[in-house]
Image (tube, rainbow, N blue to C red; front, side, top):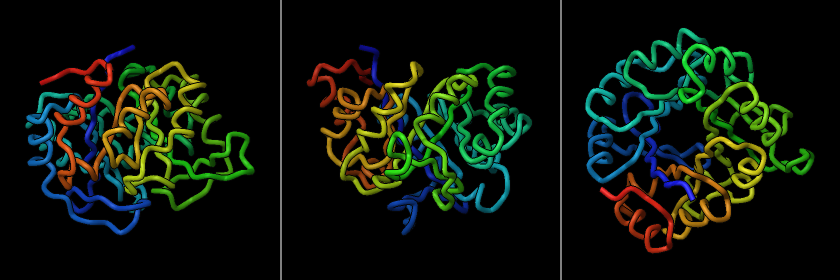
Length: 255
């Protein structure tokens, strides 16, 4: 089994870290730089920073946020939100991001994945896939975009396979049904995607108990575990999660 990584996520709005439930009911969760330093010191393997309002506000990721955070940490930083061109990818990477995450723009223009992978390498390209349950889809999951506000009519699992074929290096699936609820990752959704791709899958959306992290690996097939609420509101430390996983026989990097 590959070494599992823990990835706190900073959802950004108006220069602050925020967290909601089902992408709504947003609460303040602090300063991004303070959070980033705190998580690195706690033993985070990677960090995600998502500008959750960028697509809805029809603008690019705010590069000053990326520069401030990346200049204060040494762990890999994945940045997403409002990345809609090869130029956007380049600017975010130049601002200090290790990887870029794209979502709505990739659905609108799948060639962006291919262009990004060819120019910067697949390892720099993460495709975030938001979905919600829909029995009419072959997999049972429909792809949604624009911060979960628009349904696409596309099957989310088929889209994940296509993203890999286009050159994506990592898939970040989030089930809107579980986001922020702390009732557990949507294992069915994560497993459906990890079954059709052979690139790393990041479990996201719904972690609330220590066993949820373990289940995402052994039942979902995830290699990277993303969480926000449980870390922002100090329900668990990253060290507690890693110690728990290690005791369960999961390889992790202890700080």
